[in-house]
Image 1: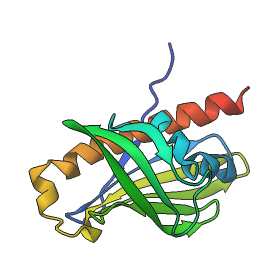
Image 2: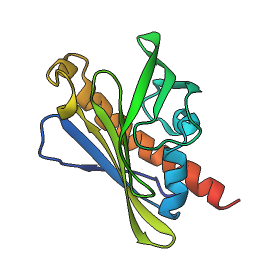
Image 3: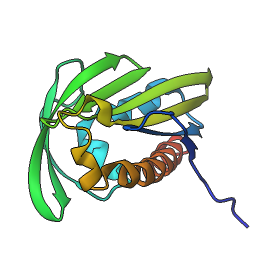
Amino acid sequence: MTEQVRATVIDTGKKYVRSGKIIIDAPASTIFAYLSDPRKHADFDGSGTVKGNVRGPDMLEIDSKFGVDMHWIVNYRIKNTVKEFEQDRLIAWCHPGHHRWRYELIAINDQQTEVIETFDGSTARIPVALNLMNAYEGNQKAILKTLVRLKKLVESEQSV
């Protein structure tokens, strides 16, 4: 019987911030390579909204801009900007609504990394408006799915 892979909810204590974490059996640099390559985002997205067709740099850095096709009720395209960046440790981007998706990587050892994903609506232009879209609860669920998908993707390629 195989063990069910799960991410853990982090109680941020903040109304407009949702987070989750997981341990991935890979170095932080390997995981960061996935996160900083916008063409891979659709591969590990757990929300089902990121559809690909990325325009922008191959690897993200601070102030990088990248566009991606999305679907939530209707098809649309969104442009994101990287707002936080520390190589192999932290990356966060936002779109014109200003809410952020952040990934923090904490090396446990050379082959294990804790990954924390956060949806930060406190940076949004109108954080309370995201309630109407059920963005906080929806993104909490998506975070857990994303982290599990990221773990499976990275670890499967590590074992090749």
